[in-house]
Length: 358
Image 1 (tube, rainbow, N blue to C red):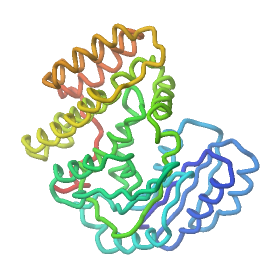
Image 2: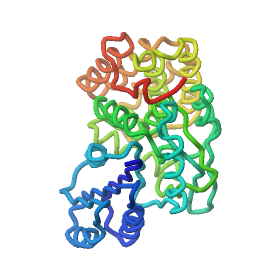
Image 3: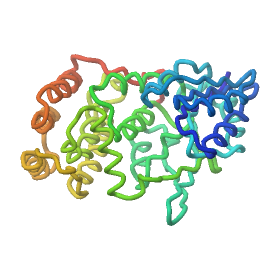
């Protein structure tokens, strides 16, 4: 089996039903489809059960967390590569057929981590085309620079991906002390460090930004992740700093990337951290009336005045200090996880060298 299309679904409106029907229509000799519905909606369950076929499995379960829904789907996949659309977006049928041809020709090349293409980004006021340059390069720095060069939403996550890379990446995400909204950026970074992506010269996917298109509503969505993780909204002040710190730490210190020369890893880590430090410095983040704002502001000012010229260990201490304003236990949990990676006492379960090229 070349490709497994995995669709975690929770929404129950007619648009979601139509998206599920479209995805199920892709099932064929080289493509399996697995749909897992965690809505708990009995009417929806009855309708989508009709879409099941020999190569299309439809599963309905009780409501559960999104990450659990996808992680379970991933364990069911049999394909060498996977693709996971969302039930509020859509993919282009011809692109799916083209992917099957690409995988037939290049899927056995271990330097290929996945397949990507062009993306339509929809907002309430316009449509645009997203294109990631450089991600087909053999050089991981060129791939990461190309990814960071696109300033819009992270639609790269809707790429076709080698299954082993996805499995190891999601193993890491589920092992982290907290799962937060910027972790889609971290997962894309790990994908890019795992190998090159063949670029389709056609539209692959259409993404509707919805609530993420405006700064205030996007941050409200970010806060949902913080609260679901048991964290005070004041942590949102560190949002982009955390993304820069976690990505750079993994690139620089994770054993899984030790096959890359140190100077290359350092260059990628520097580029990654620099961009997200600038976002942290220049883009206001809302504390949403947290009582810990004064203490958090002092820590953020200290980090901004450092211009990013701190060691990973010193950065981690300041992050712990901010977390500890509201929860010393959560602060220690975060510190212990990342301190072990910085000091190489723990090997993060990242995508390994056999799934990527240099």
